[in-house]
Length: 122
Length: 106
Image (cartoon, rainbow over all chains, first blue to last red; front, side, top):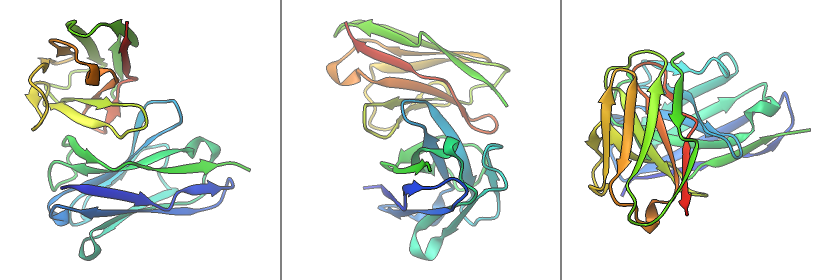
């Protein structure tokens, strides 16, 4: 069974940093590109960042470019999101999401974790 | 960025009803259109990809159609477990999602 378990969320002040982690199991992690997608409370879905199976190709939404860094450790079956210079508008539930394919080429997102909540507030 | 719109934003329906949700892209996306279902407090679930391909394990009462800029999700006979929000997403370029359609009980 595919499982994606996010951690690392919490309450943080504007301007501070937070690192999210996602532990993957039940599938061959390095066969898939991975993404982070967020959902502000009561709002819709927004793609944040994604990277290919070997980290050779990656991308960011304009809203987080230059502040967030995505990475993965295939030996640990883990995905990460380093979030710096956090803003109140970054408040959201952050989902770790599996891509159908190995490359960062906009394939469907076929498995989602349950999310970790990030609240940016003073 | 490619903008996605959905209509209606919400609808009320009864068990057994046929339900159709429409999604429109701001430019042609060929058939790079996916549909997700999200129940309250749960993560989204992929229902349909490439406009009309049913994801494994998804009931056959769900179907998708369209290409270019206009797409539809149809539930042929609404079941109690189908009351949820539905999002379209384009995967032609940088992912963007529609604003969602909430389906609730009449």
